Amino acid sequence: MAISFNQNSVFNLKPIPVESVRNDVMGLLIEGEAPVMAFQTVRDQLVFTNKRIISIDVQGITGKRKSYGSMPYAKIQYFEIQTAGFMEIFPDSELFLMFTNGYTAKFEFKGNVDIGYLGRMISTYVL
Image (cartoon, rainbow, N blue to C red):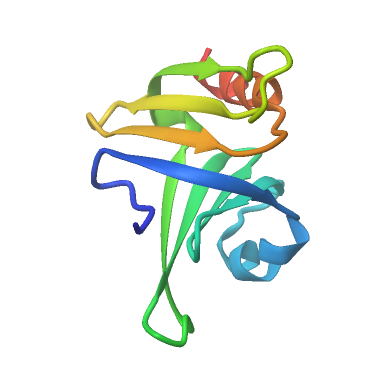
């Protein structure tokens, strides 16, 4: 499923190294902005910078065509995090975002993700 900011969706994301998406997003970043965390579905990617969330929708058979979406943290009206439970077999966590345009997104993170750090970073721009 494509990651976009125009439909309410749930995304299962696995952490990937920030360096693996750096070339894809460098042309979009403004002065002082830097990628902080990156995640991937089967083909699509989601990048959390210190200013916004960037989605990379990989299209076509070859994957050379890409569509980029951007949602600044300033547009978040409400967010909720759910941490992984103690000693769970699958340490999954979740992030729910509701934006001022009415869009909602639920991100399910697979594996060991510092969801608290994401929550603090978003709080910096929302509060």
